[in-house]
Image 1: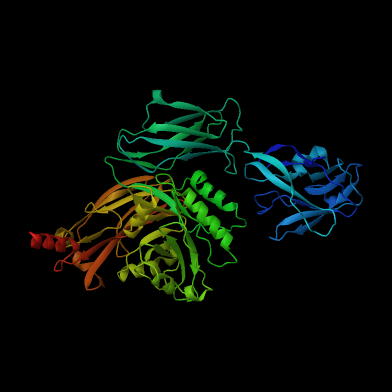
Image 2: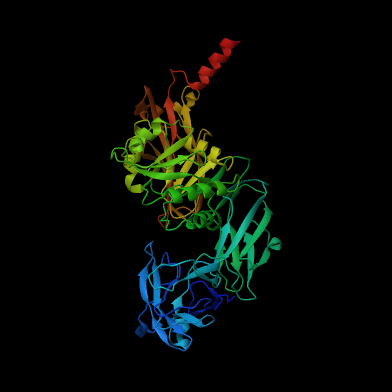
Length: 582
């Protein structure tokens, strides 16, 4: 019994390279005249996949055509499959017998110009990328299982070094660093000159301890068990000794004592998902390439955007990727309510295998209906619109946009307490990396938002960190002086650092280095700043904002100070209860 043969030349190619590809097919069945052949390159995003070829051979570059065994050329037609993606159809002008060869050519008709006028390969490296050939001998478009060509797409020439490292460590704490050698498309690559060496160092490492690394075959190198002896900010440097190029890590701060760690991630990862098999690759890219510690896809609630099958896939991979101490995957979706007063919300579950709610369904047509059948431990809500109704019991965060600053802080003025979530990156300060501790940290507002890069900040009042609620009942000295302490660390010099009290600057530092350690005292009478009131308690708040010279910024969630000198706090109530029991 004859077997079909599929073969592609070249068998492997570097990402983004232009070339001519020849797909050889030896048929295992007789194909009568007018048989329909459909060739599917798997083009989902033409910007990143194969560029869409022309079926007009007069173009002579980036073309696609079919060649029969006798050399006859058959032009094709570009069509769309059921998902609206481009495919290419060819109609056989004559019969093709079992064992006879066909060849689909993709690229330039001028062989010596293939590198210039050929078809650009996909930009993403992939082992055995499948390319499908569907055949309908009757010519009516009724296709069976496809024949598959496999093409290996490897990383292109070494362009970047990506350093995956923690941002906060403790003195003498052991930690690992992962070094990714990448091409300009962020693919792992070993494509570098043979004499390429990478020299590793940092600003406090003795010269005799410097080490040199080879570009590994896998494109990844791990440096295990590193540690810092002294507190302070560090930057790791990797120098290409061949080109002289130096890559530095984001700032790493070494604390004198153990404390919270800094975890970075994205909640509104609302990327267009065209097919089910993209879910795994998006999560893998977030974890391994972008080196995020937490992530949520947060797809739209509409069934046209997120089918039931896609939601099941998201549920499956969210569970699979959620791994304590490595990567936290949140199951969540973006809910666009029919009530304009409720706005757009991200609903994040605390557990796996939960449903997606559709606003078209009567029982879930508003956010209030959804929240009514849940308790806060089930889910949390992040708002994308600060002008919308605030569901205080469930709503634990608002996405910060500079152009919505006034609307967001008006809610703080009203006494609402919530975490700031980044439009690009959110940093959560927590002692462990798992879903429960991150949710708890968000509920306690231990976050700051950053844009255009990974920055780091610590800010405290009377030793109490970001997100704290201080009371004059337990700290009466706050009425007279506030000790403001912390640091900021960025990837470029800072243009300005400002500490605000009630959205008015009290400390401003300008034209700074990329690391700034500050200690200030606010000695103005607190009574003049207690201008806000909620539930009969007057309060004010402090927060920090810093801007780099390239416009990148970070902004912390506030620290609140409540004047309840004549009221019982939770702390004093607990003391009274303990006394009564005695």
